[in-house]
Image 1 (spheres, one colour):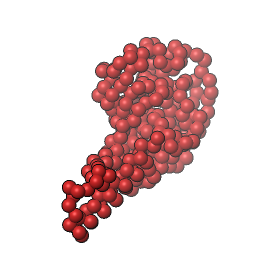
Image 2: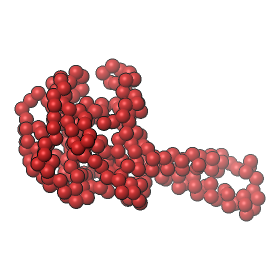
Image 3: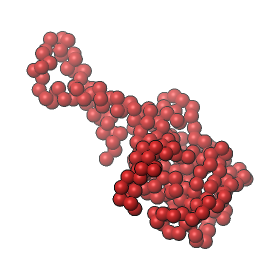
Image 4: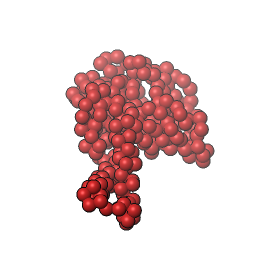
Length: 251
């Protein structure tokens, strides 16, 4: 279910009831205490639903991480907060930019609508900006001819990566973060120029991520916001809350 659509519809319906009730009472002096429940309930809920809609649309929105494509940064079962104003203030549902000039930086983790199915939200790391030339060879990305430098950290200790893997530090401009490479032969190489108004995104679990290498760049119109922090995390391996992850800032 599209929760954003549901929230917009509920806001409109309760606003109509609230407005009609206010007009009727001012015009005819109707006693509010005599209102039936189907008038009283939506009238009372309207301010609450409106506040929730405004907060989710323009300030921060919660998202759940469904897969391991962003390991080790984000695990399946993480619940994150997304800064909705980071890339400009946008209309709910349409996500048309109203004002604000923010755009992703190389190395930022962004949430966006999936280009092949805009009803789904995806989360990946931005490595290519409009006009960038992106090359990929031997598991290293090059941006405008410069490699995203990697340094080995050690083996990945958990079993949720989809096979034996090793952790590396990678740096894109001023953003440093960790990625995973699996212990298997490297495959594939390409060179690609990011179109204007689009961004090239990849998962941190490099060999287990469907991303811009598969379905192409992400349009600016599809951006939802920048990932900020983990506010809750459920560890399926341990069968409980991952207390050490709660409150972590997303690098």
